[in-house]
Length: 173
Image (cartoon, rainbow, N blue to C red; front, side, top):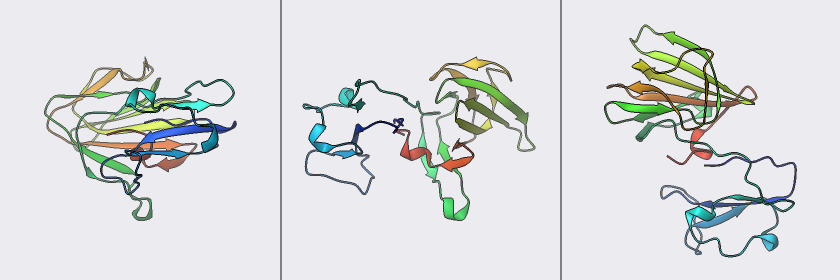
């Protein structure tokens, strides 16, 4: 999934998720933002999934998924359910969705850890962690392993500038 700076005119090409309500007759591609007349030609594969900034054609930000698994509980802002819950295989690695710094780590009453990563204007929160690989103050790269899950699901939240974001809108699960 990708999120971009929208200060300039741009074109975003996105492949629709199979469970998405969006659909198009052109094989699942839809276009958001920018000027459709300016869309680059030949967007045919997932390798072509990028933001094309009309000024310099540079992608700005790319998110990694926090872990492999199936979403069993979805984000619902109206119900104040700000996390998604991923059921993962046993001994699954938890990865940083973006480069950032671990700012919080706590062992909870549920016998699992909660970890918070700060990434510029974003905060990612990981709950249900069994084993830590990194510690508070560690800087991590996007996609780097930060923890492990044993038999508990991962609860994951994403916040931007103090507001919750539905992770499914920016991360391909």
